[in-house]
Length: 511
Image 1: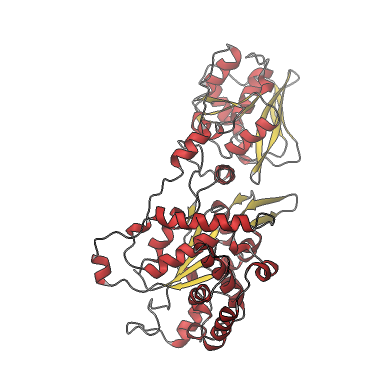
Image 2 (image 1 turned 135 degrees about the horizontal axis):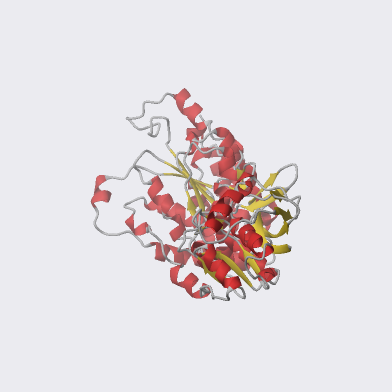
């Protein structure tokens, strides 16, 4: 007897429905699994056999042929255990399965028949709804994530016996429902860190506010213990809240990577990713023999923090150049290509020298050559994509001992939101969301300078030995500063402040 069961495969951050055809034939004995399964799927026969035996069923001693269609698409992971097991039981007449074609069935089996959670549940649920399936049957731990997709029945199963009884005896499975909008609104402002906890560093806080308002990449340069990491961790708390569309987009990526918690249904705050400096280029941008999203995709719609940036391997940093421009990653293999979104705000930090101190600090023991070699770890094209360079000075004792709290993230965020609204209105007819994305044509149109501002930037280029690439960055940042003040025109004090945020372009750093 031939039975068709439906599962799903992840391709990039989207899902594709897989038809699992199970045929049980009396003409011999054997177990044949075809359709490009990986080793985890090939080993499923052992898990399925033990699980069925421990729940009062068995794999029949007949010729079993299982085809996973489309046969030319590679399948991976143990998520098909439940689909295959139910298909075998139905095809061998051990259970009734009249309406099995109405459901997507996915889950990994333990030897005692209990179900283990799987990856990529959200895109699977979205695809199931689009293709008109009545419902989806999943391990209990995955159901809250799938339930954010409306117009789809989501059923929770703790073990294979629950699923067997659902089809065979009509015994109902728990139906999971989540009020997506309510949950989204309740947790949209849940932040573990707040800028009010940062003592001193008013200049750096201001730079962070400007960066958040314009979506600018930023690098913090300062000695150990000056608060660079502390500042970076608080950036998500001043960024605009995720829209529901962005939240779903971000959740899909984390779901595919298996980074969603069992009690989490939706990502409600912008992600903050901080990979260790020993990370490989594949782990950062994504890829592998079975492609998975990398850290830059996990930071999509959020913040990627590279602590001690010069300590990262140069090859790792260089592979970020294209994603910083294109805001997506394309991973190509001989048989397929996948795209992962990667629109993130880069926040980086570094010490001013190998010894950790600024060149004019008495504690600095690094020679000019050592400092130059240290700075050369960051290439010009990469620094070209970082709009704001800010020096973070050591915090004085008086500031540390100050009991008065600093300005709250909530207050800073209000100003950022106003600036973003201005930008949204300005670029509504363009494929641009915020100032950091504007190109040469938009610069000419939206960043015009009056005579005094032009004279100021010209003098800065000459006197401070600023590089040519600094010019565009100064204009972009000045545009954001003007937006924070709700000023239509870019004035000289906006340009003056923007010039202060180009530390690494000065002769002091370039040797």
